[in-house]
Amino acid sequence: YNNTDGSGSDSQWVPPKHAKGGFACVLLDEENNIAIRLEPMRNQVDAAAWLAFHGVLDLYASKAADAVAKDRPRHVYEACRDISELENPGHSSKEIRQVMAWNDTALVRKYQEPTLEAFTRHIVKHRNRILKRSAHKGSVVVRDERKGEASTRLMTPSAWFWHALSLPVLPEEANRTEITELDRTRRVRGRELAEVLCVSPPGTYKGREQRTMRLLCSVFDLASYDASKIYKEQRAGASAAMVTNILRDVGLALRSMHACGSAHGDVKLANILYVEHDGYLLGDLPALLRATTRTFTIDPIAGSAAVDAGRRMLANDCWGLGVVGLQLMAGPARFRTILTNFKKILEPGKAGPCWLIMAMSFLHALGTSSLSPKQSNPELAREMSFYATHARKLLHSTTAKAMLHLMSRPQREVCREFGVKLARTVANHPAFEHVWKQLAYCLDSSNLARNAIAMPLSDAVPFSLSGNDTVIHFSGHDFGPAETP
Image: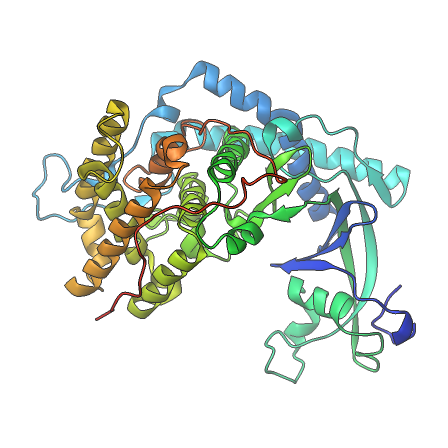
């Protein structure tokens, strides 16, 4: 029923369980073990394209990833560190390096762009079939058996339908009361859908101006939890099994998307879902142009002024996964301390330089000190020293210097210290021996050609929710509050 027109009685109305974010509201139906994602769409063509994106990934992404891994094209596996050079070859060392565009790497020119064009053609064909199918078979469309979800590690819908709904016209800003013409036509946000459908009792908006909205309702398997919930509950950090399996499963999901030339764009804990019998899946597809958590999902270099339109780079997904690994291994208290101190230095949306220093100091500490068990692992010693060299080179490049000039030397030192402290904590985590290759690759901002196809994956670890895998205590370095000049 529609509770926006005053129908129904308060005594019969029970607020449904739900989640919200961006432009969607998700109803959680535990009785039928499904989740229904409600998102306003401008027209049926846009909705069919959104569904076709999922369908084509489900059909072809796993095969594409296997084919690329077998062929091993050089431009996919070759690093691009031109941005961290001190000068252009044959030019004065005082000359500032020319600004790079997102498609200035061989990875993009020779693989991502042509692959994405072919992928888009498949989406258009699939979209047209969906439009014909929905026109002939009514308002509810059930997909054929999903073929690739287990191998792609991507959350895809099993059915979808349209639902017309009358919603009150609300001002976009919460503290504003007057209604503008823009409010009558703008896209409704997820928090507004949740407020009207799931929070406010019937009759709350009776007598208000209404607008008719068409919602695309997509049906997914109900997830047991998302990774952010477990992260918040594990004060000392998640277990080795959970960290390793999340990084591996999300790495496989990104590999499926990157093999099709598509970036996810919003890799974060809240978009990593655990589904019983399937493991960890990556959801909220696609989020290419609407990532809301820039700090965690956009690489400091790829998202800086030094790289034009960096949001479209595959390296952003690798950075997001690296931050997920750091959050899980450090725990919420330690990570919150870092966030609090960085906010005192630069605004959250402009804190890229802080994260760049911290990440490069993190890699440098692991590669140049006795924090990690390098004596018993020659491969770790060799590769971490390699990343440490490139981290130092990036911080001394003209690109980094242009970013860091807003910060004083004491402020840069605060960020560096947090990188070193984080390295001590991560090196002592039981998952470190399983994930160090993948974690270092993801956080290496000096390489703009990072992608999930070339990314080394962690080894799978036996995992059971009913055991003690979800709780772990380890002796990491104390993350006390740091003083910020």
